[in-house]
Length: 173
Image (cartoon, rainbow, N blue to C red; front, side, top):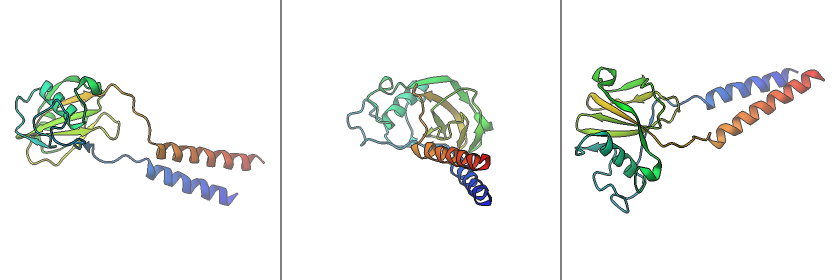
């Protein structure tokens, strides 16, 4: 009886640590070589500096280029909501900033730089920084796809449920 409780307690601790989300959203990394087979011919760096015509359409095209899509339509990328000016009071970071919409990617403009981040926590909160300059505005984009949990998370959940089931069955007997 004590060993099954100890096992369940250990499993609960492992699961709680394993499924704790990361602190910050994840920087999007350019997955294709610069300007190879892409419609986007501007800067292929993230963060990008001095990108021309800082507007949601240019940012959408740049994001699609970073993600390696032939166009924003190929990745089902769309802007959600409108541009949010001076989020967080123009500080050099955003922590759990709630834009009030569901999004997959956020493009952050700070100084002469843009940076694209993936909402890796799936919490629809923006957490980025510290950045070299104050955040002037952000634009949010969705890929229109459904996110699927990682296999490791599903395996941990299954193991936890199995352990609970075994413990409950032994308790009843």
